[in-house]
Image (cartoon, rainbow, N blue to C red; front, top):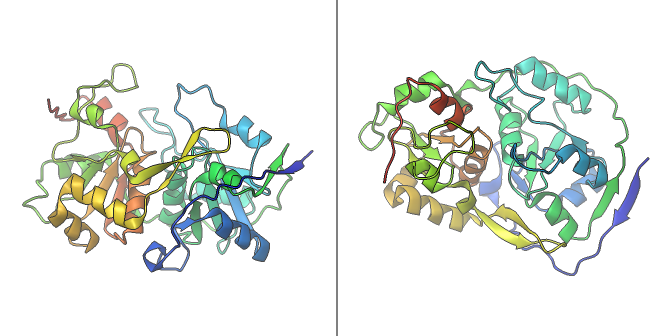
Length: 331
């Protein structure tokens, strides 16, 4: 049984108008504002996916929150379910091609469907889901900037109760773009190269909090060493985001304007390297704790037009769990 409710709020979320640099090569925007999504829903059939994910120690239950409050017509995609089984027990690893296609069929998604992805933090797990869709060649996919809290702040309709069943579709098995992913073996080989002098090296950007990167704060996973991959640089994911005030007084995140993302990138890697990255001379790989917030760096750089970019799926957990990995610490 569904119920529809509408909230009213005079505050309007300030989100920059999309420009050409925010568009993918297929013309589908990487980011959409709540009003843009609302307009799309009224004009065409949009496949809405709530991909909310919380840290394992969080008391919040994303699926239960989805049942109680969501954008009308949305379905819930669990990133830990639509994932590959990993030898080290890592969660939300990129799914096999057929598993991705099966999930799309279940949600009524066709190859030409416009998929709009959101989460309840604002911006947290939605970029990771967008990375998944884009890596499987589904370029008609976008993230709702600010997620469900931004939608609420705009006073747009909400829905609650069990979602209505959708008509399943046929989705052909896609081909994954292997250049978008980095394996452990590739990361280890890359860690022996200094990107400041070797043009063949990827610059690895670490999205974890800086003190974990430095090795001065512990990792949330018990027994896992903190520190960083040799030659990697620290770029905490939150510096690409800004805080906004939600309806209930809590904050939620949206992406910074492009100029500010560029400034943050320059602060982290230097103006010269930032220019090489945006011009496609220097390749970048994003990493984090478990492959989730690396998606935020990936999307932020995509908004700057960066093309030579990949994501280390296992990220720090997979790297540091292996006793043969070289771990550096800075004090």
